[in-house]
Length: 118
Image (cartoon, rainbow, N blue to C red; front, side, top):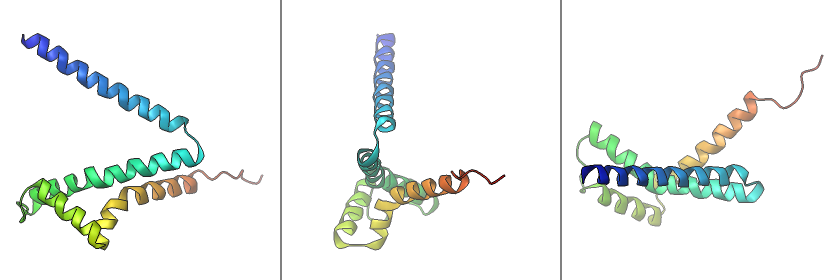
């Protein structure tokens, strides 16, 4: 019975890996506006789902328990802050997309496309 459960768990992990690989291939094959919109959507999802989790985990390790409750209370406060126009919350939301643009700019600076004069 235990082996059956392990096989089922491994197949689910494998399926997620296939889906992520398919998404990565789709992103790499997309060009122009479609690729930029896909990148923006992924970055916004990271900003809404992953960043508050990271903030909660780091804050809990360094500062202790969150004063208003658990992770879901932090998400509620984060979404309320977005609705209220909090600059901090909007920076957290748009931070991954801004980081993507900074990485793109750094890549352009490091890989100068003009040929050196001989």
